[in-house]
Image 1: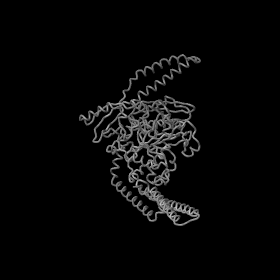
Image 2: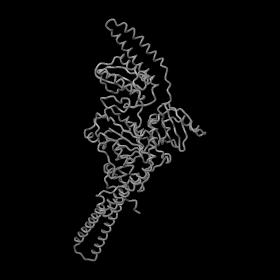
Image 3: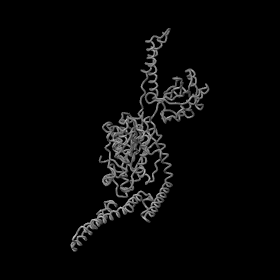
Image 4: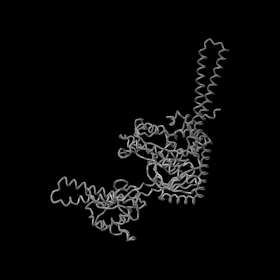
Length: 636
């Protein structure tokens, strides 16, 4: 009848009943004594009754306290340890006689059995894993975007190119959110009519035009997406603008017999600026014929010296050709006694400027042209440096500023590939129900924030999130610093290490939370001490317009469901009980705590299932029993 109550509460009720029964029996005994004995002074009897009552109550409470401390609490924690497969600590097991060592032996045996099973599976799957890794590498470098959906149109696989075409693409989300459905629906109709595959053109939700091919699969559909070829506009207007600026500038230069009038100097400056702008536009147009391959900045500058660490930028370029050209120019500079180093600077649009820099006089343009007329790679004697630049739709020229001379080459960038293998997938998503609320089936975003302080008036300075799908990490992550618009107190910096200088150029709260809302969508949010983090998100809704009305799971409450109310449920205590190590440098960083919380959540799921808590709704009901510990963020 009382099985739904916790062990400690049931024991408390038993001792309360024992105490009440003892008091009733003692009272009845004294009443009989009072009736049978003729007492001229009842005060001693009353005093005796009170002493007996207090004594019985104190004795029962004392015995209950010892029983709860030495038996009930250790048993509750022992159950949590067994459900998570970890041996109880010495403090938990010391009052349980042989039960503690037996539990440790059982946990050790289970761990050995699990390890043996894992080793056997790993040994059996080595060949399959090698093939899987090879396939991932191939698909990661595949130029086209590859997306696979299940029969419901939800994404179960995508590669890095697809995530570049469709920003925000994520597992277990409808593909129709990223592509206008008209062309896609028409292509699906053609498949239903019997075609194995069909081509189509479509627009992304951001207005980018793509071409694609849709193929039917046994449990869904496969899309191959490519950037539709952009017809290069005829550069007649750009060439005419160059002719006009040049024809205007030449007579002005011919009139320079004496001091330059202010009006003439201004006109020359305007025409010169026009020439520079028009040349840049022509370079942009010609860049549409640049190589389709990609290369990192590290590949392009291999063999060159650099003063500072170069950022991980990806360019649309042939790595071999460009690296050979930059090395040849560096050697030519060294032949002139110039020790140059590589650097990178911002430029207009999606371009960056790669430079070779040194202190001193610039290189004359005719000397640079002579260098560019030579083949930089002896293996390709028919390809000069000028040919390589033309092939990439760019150029290189000398500049000097503040005593720093440089050779400047603008080059177009491309979005960097996502971290990890470059492909993200979970084919098992196709087999599970769309609306399953089982904890092991949920699509979740585990997140954490770092703030300027702990009060309601403080602000977020960092937020990070990891996506889980069907009980596994997908590799999709979100992380950003946030400019709080106020100084960060030194006491807070001492905890999370974030300074005012670090957030000076960070996005503001509106930009950061809007992006995080897009990352989360309607996934279940998971946090440790969720009311704290959710409080900051919900209070910011009026300012940012980003509303987080998602369902919420709190690992503090989940820990209490497994180990009981009396255990310590801090993140450090929880991860220690689960055998999770948080590197010291990652503790109290948003991503470090997020990773630890995600690992803890994944290990708590089977323990909760063993206790009969399998669905989200059941966790909400169970959370009500722990409202004295922490509030449920779903009721906020």
